[in-house]
Length: 369
Image 1 (cartoon, rainbow, N blue to C red):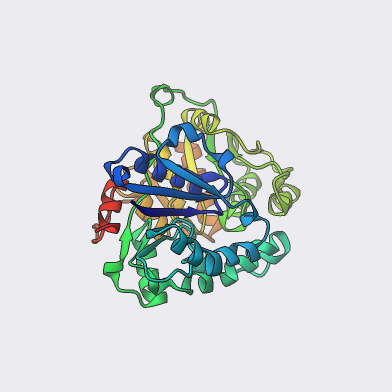
Image 2 (image 1 turned 90 degrees about the vertical axis):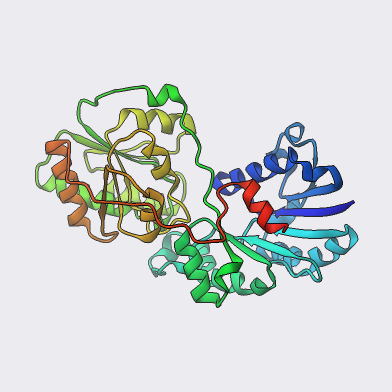
């Protein structure tokens, strides 16, 4: 019996943890497990209902999130010894960093688009750790990256950036879009018309989420005496210094509703009630709210950036705006408030480039070939 390792010692919440759970759920039910030991290296077993993964062996690394030094120790020293002791035949790292292991095939799944983001010095004030993390992230990506048999990314534009930044052959980079959650039919069936035009931005507060452009657009609309609308944003100032700065600056603007973080079900409920999604984030590997909201067949205003266009794909109700052009967004919002419609932008799905994996089955067939 040989061992396949799925390493994700840094995951503890959100989209990355969902990717890990989806991956393990797939492996747990596949014939590959009949003669293979599947080991999942995780931060904490408490993140999982182990009964749902009866064919997966969980190994905890509770110190992995205590400091980056522990993380680097595991990745660049300990895992090499671990792979030898456990007769590992394939190593799949789900969290961006390529470990220093010798003599076995390995692959890395790269979620984090930070190396491709333009750094803004003002971010040091509101989120200093995140700022310096982004600054050095491309160097973490680069360490050992050419040891990988394959690199897995979620979108074509990131694949092109990896080719350019790290001089990697495009045949080694697999594009594997995330599995999009299907919104429950109970929410999709609602056909509610709001009394006033309502916009919505579901987000966790990070500087690259570009919340300010919505707030500044609202300021312009208010100065122009535009009425009968509101904008709902899922922060309340308690989350971190960035959200605190947003509330301090814009908390008194009427028409802005800061409601704090909400559950996934409440997000779906708001999708069913509102008129339009605004998604201004400057950096995403995949704009998941865009994919979710498309299922409601309602208008989406999002940034004119490669990730957003790739996420939108083919959709009749989208309007793109410049990520730094407050006036443009305000004009789009004003026209929509007054007319409840717009001249939308033409879109189309990008041509898929190989290797491409539309699901876990296809991905592992490539990785283990």
